[in-house]
Structures are given as structure tokens and as C-alpha cells.
Length: 202
Image (cartoon, rainbow, N blue to C red; front, side, top):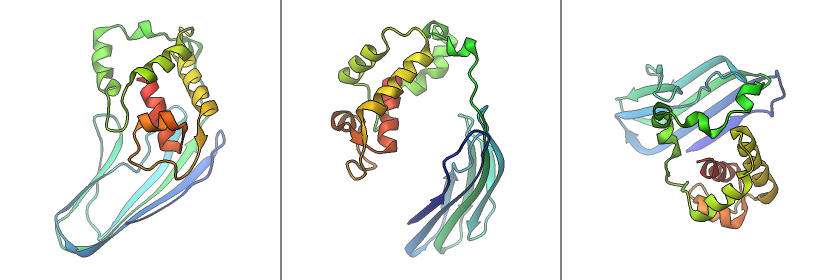
């Protein structure tokens, strides 16, 4: 499998063109290939998708839909035998300034006390394969956020702590490294810091 992607660091209001290409080369021909893609970004208040094109070789019908989590999803099937598969996306997005209202910035945990809200967010608070909630993680999070009533302040406190305490070291971890190991090492790459942030927010 060969992966290639190109992008630049955005500035407020900038327009980005992102090319992503994944190529599979099989030892022998395969058939009945079923694929689901998440390559087109969602449009948010701070980011707008200007254009998106997903191309598949061998050519086949690609179905675009929005999944249960509101992610833009593409699905395709290749019933015929093929030795190679290439998936390419060309995305144009506009980066917009992120403006947080005073009301939203002051939101506290009490706003999530309603049972219907708690039911909707429950799936996002559970442990996952690489992110689990340990006593050490919980203790560090409480120490960092105990004096902050606003959720935004809590999250910013956690983010700033990760930025200060963890060093970016390629090769220190792999794609299979669990949050517990990253938390002990205080080293890793972007995905590791994301796992730490997710665990502490959960």
C-alpha cells in the first residue's frame, strides 16, 4: 500500500487544496472489494468545503452519503477481479476564523445534566482500543481542571498541559501504541497527543 498526501498549514481565511492518494497492489487478483471512505471533510463554522472529488480506479459507482455521526462518507464496491486499486481525493477547503460566543465559552458541565443530552454523548465517553480512562489519567485531569467551571477553560488547560509536558518524537511510538504508554513516556506524535487529549476529556 502506498500513501501520499499534500497540504499546507492554514491561516485564517486561507483556501487549501489537499490531494490524497491511496494505492493497493495485490499479489493476486481480488474480487468483491467493499470500501467505505472518509476523505471529504465536514463543513463547520470554522471550515467550509469548497469542492470535493473522489476518484476510484478501476472505475465504479461511488455513493456519497452522511453517516450517523454526520461524517461525509463515500462507499463503493468492486465485484470484478482486479490486481490494483487506486483511491484519490481532491479537496478544496476554506479555513475560517473560529469565533466562540461569550455564552458558549462560559458553558459549564451543568449544561449536560439533562438525561437526553447524556444519552446522546454517552458513546463518545467510553473507552476505545487505544484510549482508556485510568486512575492516573483521571487524577491528572482533575488536578488540571478542578478550579475551572467553564468547559472551554478545562479543555484549554488540558491542551496547554499536553503542549508543555509532551515532546514530539518520531519513532517513539507506533500506530498501535496505547494511551497508557504515551502518558508514561511523555513522547509521541500527533495521534498520540490526540489520544491523551481524548482520554483526559472523557
